[in-house]
Amino acid sequence: MNKKYGVLGGGSWGTALVKILTDNKFFVNWYVRNEENAMHIKKYGKNLSYLRSVNFNKKKIYVSDSIEEITKSSDIIILAIPSPFLENELRKIKLQLKNKIIFSALKGVVPESSLIVSEHLNNYYHVPIKNIGIITGPCHAEEVALEKLSYLTVASKSKSIGKEMKVALASTYIRVKFSEDTMGVEYASMLKNIYALTAGIAHGLGYGDNFQSVLISNSVKEMKRFINSVYKINRDINDSEYLGDLLVTAYSTFSRNRTLGNMLGKGYSLKAAVSEMSMVSEGYFATKNAYNVVKENSKEFPIVHTTYEILYKNRSPKKLMKILSEELN
Image 1 (tube, rainbow, N blue to C red):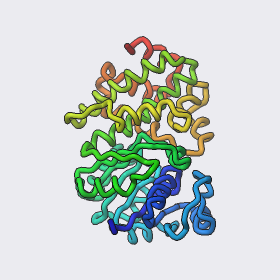
Image 2: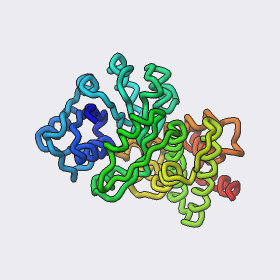
Image 3: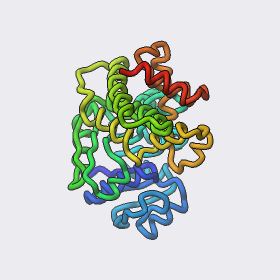
């Protein structure tokens, strides 16, 4: 419990994780890439760009715009950098990663490798699987900032480091569970962004709650088939780290993936929709990864195929959602 925590990422989720840890009296080293934001946090104890209502105890954080400095000073690293920018940042600290305990709090894939983060860390940076953990929801950073009761899942092959992180994150407003299903939890975290994006497209096109309920129930079944195809063990897809995380991402107004889909359904081009959003939608990159895994099997994975066609082949959302609606049951 005397290990030093380092959070890499100054966005909303990184900010939320720093809040949770410092509220629990842990000292946190915090990498914030933007120098102006880093200086503002140092001076005022508030993030200039994300979750601005959160006030930090400045004695509990050390903030730097040097990822090398933060990584070197920390024993346990929590990755909260959006996946499109992760690989560029990891390259800066590749020599420091091998002996660190690393938890991924990302919800997507690394575009350069099309791998989930744990696989990327293991394959490209030779971080042992036993030193890698996952932090996932169902949980939105915005509700953490408001201290609304929220739920996290910590997954790791190592019970000792997993349960240590579980204790570190648990609080009066955070409930935490432990899982050894690292692969399933991480793939579920990736897939729920795709299904939330699809739900957003349907909403933007004017489909109602009745259709949404059928879409999400089919998404759950598709998620189960997908995860079992890559890593089959005895798991209950209805548990909160799978179904719960999918539901909150698909329905919440805080969901950036649902927001992106909603804009596409309303007629925005992908480029225009992305340019209007201030945060990264992980579902865009996740869709390509998922499609590459199941591209030979459109009948078993029609939602992934439909979303891929809309995002990457510029097909009509209206036409494809109509076809999808006839395949769902």
